[in-house]
Image (cartoon, rainbow, N blue to C red; front, top):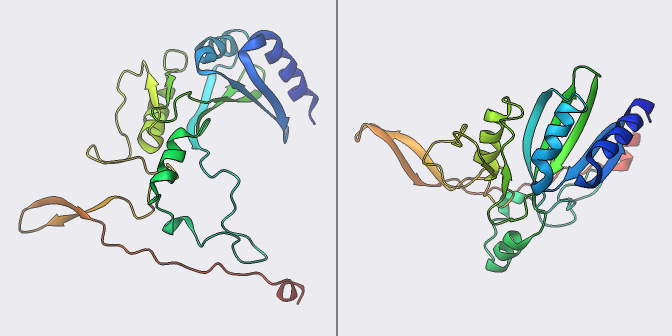
Length: 223
């Protein structure tokens, strides 16, 4: 483990104090967690006191089903076939997904050009049904499109964002494609209708095709 990362962890703990919910070093990378209420103050301290001048990346994460392995390499899948046939048809599954604590996270990757150091910061919105965190645009202007992308794909709202619109999907798109309860086939499909002279939306005509995973057998590997 690099001493520079351990030194950084000590400095961050000293500067942020009780604002840090957790602090871990793994694979020579420091990851800390802060609460939504302390996030902006923590980011300002990281920028001003520890010279993390650059926001390299901001992304959303959906931890629904985190740790459940549907595919394995040396034997067949242990549960089900694939997420392609898992569509949350059961109302209880939907309610469980909405009620799940710490389902969504916003992950920030920061770079200190001055000190040549990096840090990862996680913020978990409190409300899963309507996940909201504060925008960091006033701290790092580069967050603008990153936050719009996280909103578009995960449905995470960024309070204080000056123009929170979809950035990758169509303006009339329903749902958020990277949520793990979003069907792989989507909700609707669109095509150009020559008779109407415009693009039209229709129910999805794609049918799920269940594939059995390829099994890697030890005998074949040894041969």
